[in-house]
Length: 108
Image 1: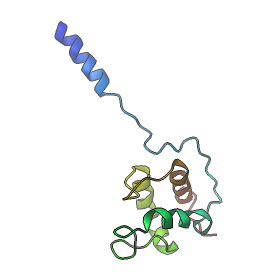
Image 2: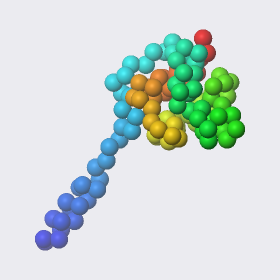
Image 3: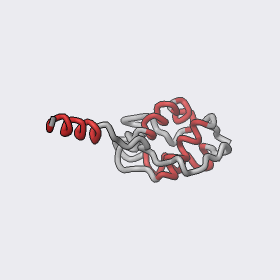
Image 4: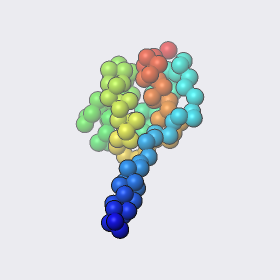
């Protein structure tokens, strides 16, 4: 009986986990967000370092067509915290990238 309580306690604590890796829920999405207006600056600042999306190891995200073509992979990587490879994005930058992709990856 004593072990049953211990097992239940262990199962209870092991089943809890944080489910919001990006913490962008409270940041409003502007559907008019564009690559040239916001997104390119985020990519240039965070993703064009040597060994990353520098045009040598991976295609450069400083190019709109390349970024648009890879937008779903970018969304997944940003949401899961895999991108950027070196460092982290602010919650506002994560929200901006995800919003841009979800709004159609515009370049207006």
